[in-house]
Length: 122
Image (cartoon, rainbow, N blue to C red; front, side, top):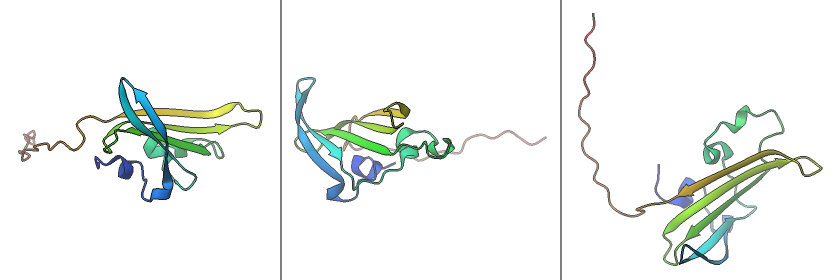
């Protein structure tokens, strides 16, 4: 999986996300971004669940991603919300997923995979 949160969340064009405001979280000033109506997410991927298994018409019809990043663009956290509400406002589907980013942009050494033992055939 890519470490770039914009690609992970399928944000491929500038008009898909907007700056909401600067906020202080845990003593750190962060830029709060939110997706716009131009964003077309894959709710199953973001919810880490098979949304397609929901009854017809119950898939989230309102999807919002909030992303917090430092002034130099380092992502800190994100939340995904997918909802589908009845006409009276009752939430029929309410999905909330939180993401945290750690060590983004830090090189990682990945060793060469070694063969794993397999049982002998009888």
